[in-house]
Length: 293
Length: 220
Image (tube, rainbow over all chains, first blue to last red; front, side, top):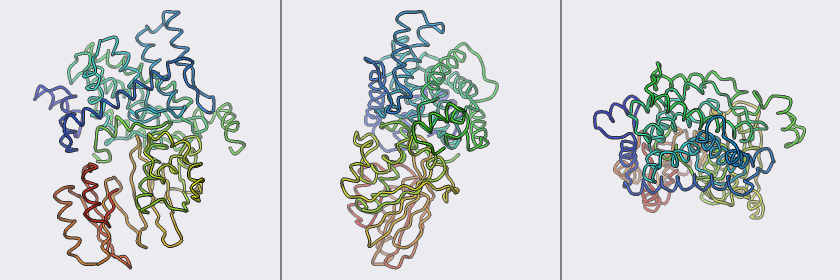
């Protein structure tokens, strides 16, 4: 795989290949698997994402065992039918997909981690909205996942993708950056614009803490994926408009790593600080797990 | 740049039962590795949690994930949430301990599994580094302490004949089919142990090849 975003973008420019194509070629080379096997595996990931969204958006939706989350994708669906969302219907369609996915995750349903389960709604949120808005076919959607995955790999190896090591910025932040870069390619942008989108999306969520109430992947995780999806679309639009992140993508990833390392333990998936530490957060924890707080 | 993550499918994937890739899917993987090291389902397991695992294992389903892994289930197996009950029905003595100190292997998502069947005891120290990927940083096997680099794959070959020639065979084979970045040789009372840190992901066919050709090899 590629060492840096810069190297990946430069290779794309020199070879006149798309980011997704380079990632597919690198994956085949590293794994020794045929192109068709690699492709089919990603196809299965795509199908899993679609199934999770459909499950969360159907009927009354899903509910988690604790009852803390669930059913809100359905509220958004109805709202979109009855009103004109302030942020526009496309934005709220992405949000609905994202929330549906994470509600299914919280309800111990089947999801595809992108890059993690806690952030599994962000990328499909944007992708399945774009399927309709840009009329993407399956091949383009699978390419979206390869582009996102290839860039996510660079983020994961230079920083991390775990709330316990670097906060939510490494989960929803990474997911949002991956989705932004892939959205640019899907919309016909250049590899350099993908890199800009990644930098902008990552910068905008830098510092986001991981503070799950009672340690559960429910509050605030589900709604943070809505923001991750929305942020990815804003960053992609900014990049497509020609806006520039003054800080290069690879340096944004470096900042992600450093911010993560300097984050206190209470804000790294311990269920102690942030929203988890609020009186209501502590009350919920006591209600679910007994008095031991 | 580290080489913690090796494949695009570490990032897009795994397909799994929620709610947490590091606390659930990764924990299943640590359990599966423990099962593989033990060679069967261990009848008695004590799980020591550290850091975020100690604080949040109940909310994240880490207990059922470890139980599922110990029985060899995959992360997307629908039986994963029911694993502790299934384990109890099978008579497995499974205990979880929340440790308050720092992780001995220096990662906030640490689970240390001590497995025993009365005859042998095997200890494995794993951490879940995010997105379902895990590292194994310490293994106690055949009475010796093994310290792999951490990232998978890891191949462990036990040579009970203690003859270098046996090791040379697998050594050459690995160089051809699964190049390694480091090899360690440890002397246990009953065998010599060779530990290889493999560079790239091993495909299932390659794993099967090695495990069939070398019955005392374990591919993690």
